[in-house]
Image 1 (cartoon, rainbow, N blue to C red):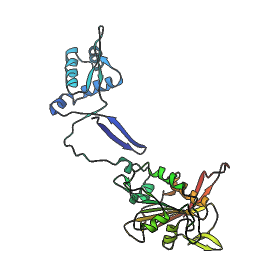
Image 2: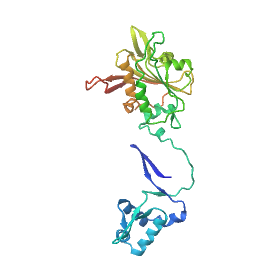
Image 3: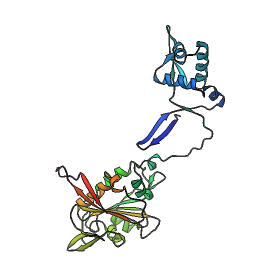
Image 4: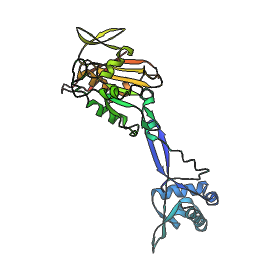
Length: 308
């Protein structure tokens, strides 16, 4: 079994191979600066006894004693033997450790991997023990609902799933469901990420009255909040509320009046997550208006603006 040291900083996770020393008596002779100096030198390149003695400014016999201790601890080994230089030693590991107790705590690394604090807080309830906890709800591709609409934004869930897959593993249950499945299987009391507006996604319709930014139909559909009415095609909403059917769960709605508005919300949530959630601080009710732009003129959204 290989063992590693796990380290982390603001740029991510890093591992370094390590040697677990089981016998404390093997550890005592190597916990000193001379042994560390020898290990550092051999980690760069293999060396003979004479070369080690020269590097450490030790008598050859004293250097041989340190080599014996390091070999017994399993920290160095003979790489090969030459007629001119004798045994050539190399380091077997980059670090060593003594394990006081074997806790065997399973670490869900992906759960900790969300790079910025706001995004981590936004999806906190959707990741449990390193696994996705909830459902991603998309509109049915068949005519359904009072408008007999056909959802054309289902594929957006793939991009969202790829984003979330960086941070969590697959759950036991299949996590992608249709809006009609949520209704027929009564999944309303789960954590839900709902994609699309109320015309194409009936779950958005059913939670619409609880949203801080509501979808309203007057002379055509629009998003309405305290700042006014937002009806441009490229505008969408990212909204988070406590699940009105189960207060311990969350509902996230990513939707727009048109497909391009929904896509803007998806991209703001994923590709531009650090910008979008930079001010999110675990509020139970939260929303942001998103506008997607094609800055380079290639016909695809490549920039977003968030308005609170």
